[in-house]
Image (tube, rainbow, N blue to C red; front, side, top):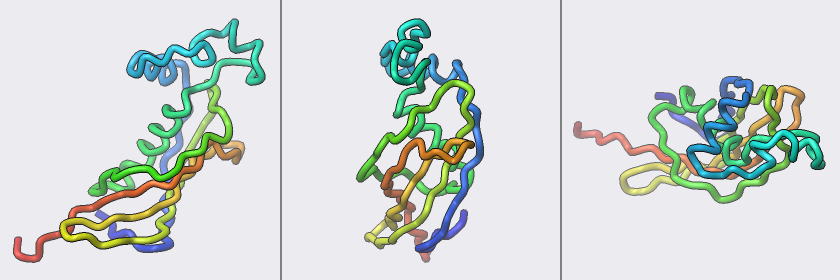
Length: 140
């Protein structure tokens, strides 16, 4: 488990979002908005086709980092902004930067910036997230 420090940047893996991701997320959440699941409807919108759920992009972005932040837990979010849609076939990756650290009694909080980025360098979302990590007990 890596000890994170202020200024650390962690790159997540890449993933190509496909129909399976979008339809599975719709099924898990019950969010069947036609922008996500209806080709005919979505092609007549400003997006010119279906788009993935914003929260799918956020979930995938965190998942793409999970191997690189093993031992840390998600404490919460302070802000999330969905800047651009994810379309089926788009490859995304995530980046995390540690901005500050606060020590608590039994755990440490890491205030971070999260970006999910398309392969074409477009920012899909930005978020301020807080990771936590249980403090190691020196007597154990």
